[in-house]
Image (cartoon, rainbow over all chains, first blue to last red; front, side):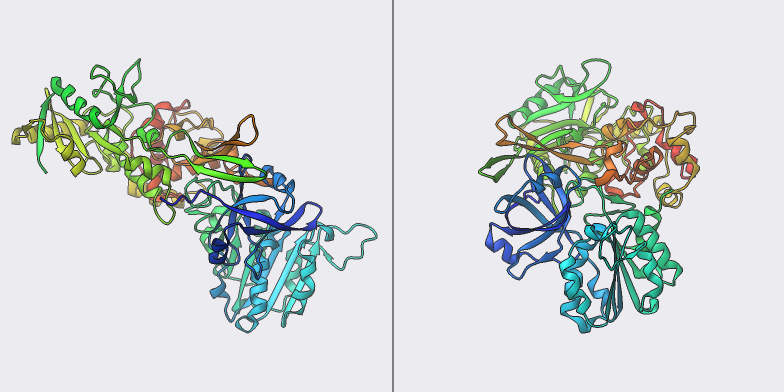
Length: 276
Length: 346
């Protein structure tokens, strides 16, 4: 019987430093045929596995032309800490991709609003590139990205390309800017960019990913400016041990975040993510 | 299929036949409590038991098991699935526990299959035993999971006085008793079974409206019961929950597990293991940076209750079967049927 818990071996081809605690790892499967058959959609995640340490659910931020996987990781826990000790040429285990990604077909001919906080931009990168490549299928694109400081922002090298996307806007906000820094970011919450958006809520879809508290707040704010619950999608973060809906940890109400998510319609999970 | 009877004193013949092909497990009573363990001789077999502490889930989804053995050489890992191919036969499983297995069967199949569970299940023969002595805590009749069984068995036994009625459910079961020259069951035997079912039903004191509670519970996520259960007060004479996780450990449908790796002294090999986890424990919902989606005790006990009412992610595949084990082991005397009644779904 096929064992879904068994990780595939992959080699670290490159490490891109994004911020002081964040790296992007370029991974290639040792099994070339498996790499060729690997299909994914933006917003999905995979389980990175280090034997002797454990597994961690990490989103796919990009798939390169030759099929290499880009996974952007912040050093925050046991597994990610160990991944940070790896060097170019080291091996790592991968299972996946798992979950349902962003509802790309629901975005067709719609204004797309992307709200990202911190590491929440990682699962959006694939989607933004997808929209860029098939621009005529989508209407206006608004990207609002908030981080703690300008130095904490990731994919900064992509911003120039994203700004070139026709009929789009990229707004950056941070909590603070250190003295002497020459940053053009605004100071404030991502939600402070909502009033200046040039999209109309009647024909728009909002996608949010970030810390849970930020997502709740952003979704609430969108509600007040006229978005309906059905127009809002969130990508949730939960503890995951299996990624395939068996270990139980990622339950959100009647759903598993790993199998039925991690992208959920706001209407579907609203009552379960608002704290009591 | 045909049905037979066997004298109770002749059970050793049956056991001997089972032992020819299988490692046989069944209820034993070493002290005050019963448990499922290996049966080597007929004297050990204690079919007269009321309920075991741990459900037979432990044979299929063990409290702890190794999934992979791995080796790391020059930075490269190789892993090997650890397979469990032992053929076992479990005798004397009560209907509630069989229903629990049927639920877990569904949970561990689907788009992604759990090879460990399915492998063990495939290699196991179920000799169920209708429950004529329900415990004071059970409420299987209201959950439609007992006290008598109509599916999920290879062989089904019913205590009908000095004999057991033997009904067959599968070809495997049929083959097992082939050539034993058992007496065919008579109409009287069936009558006796029916009579025993009625008396057994009458002995069940607790109840819960399974359909109603699943509908009501979901609409009452903010009911004061959850606060009483979690923080202060308690429900129907119980103390507040202590988050000890006993209920999840003894529950025959609780499936949540944790995965962790162990490393040998060489630091070059080890095993990846899984272990039953409990949603009552604080770490269950924890994520990086110390975020926790079920930090409060009331959220955790509510989650478990909802799961057992069938309105969590497991759906009806992890819902209650009415075995009453959680009521028996709860140090705070929390009674799931009383909680259901307090929300209005009794």
